[in-house]
Image (tube, rainbow, N blue to C red):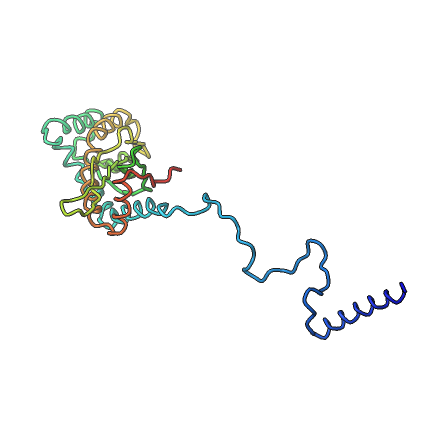
Length: 270
């Protein structure tokens, strides 16, 4: 009896295998058992959904700070900032003393000629190689203001007809512009310029090369430039920034202004 039952089971298995090889459908519930943990593969792109971690989702405001600084940089360059800096009549301003006829002429030219008797002639001070470096951006703790750092680099050349190139100085200076969001009487949102000034302590003057010994000349020139140059540069940069803010892309202005008005932080601190 046991032998007969075994033969029946064996015949059943052989018939099932033959049907599979021939492509015939199997009766419901009579498929071959699959080994444990080896289920049929899922079709492509139809796997189980993965859990999405909120931290991995991109913040839709992340791009705003970069777009804003890019727009400002492009506006400053297309607005002719570098040419404006290069054409600052520094020598004329130094001679006039900023309205004080005795100030800087006596302070600079007098000390230079007293230090070097051969320099009893007109000095030529030119700004060359102006550069706009990468802008910085921070948001106020309350979220309602932006502070844009505009770093500038330039070279000062001090020349004389008799000696030629006397001194060559590298100058770095930061201008900080405050940006606020306001609504006009018609309810339209604008970005406007608040305070705009040179950053205290950001002026750096470094000697690149020069005729020696000229330490006293360098000290005198550096002292006078420290008092005069930041205000000169600030007076050229800030009006440009004010004009750029009024011509930014409308969508960019709206997105940033809405966040500032509600005090929402969006500037990524690195």
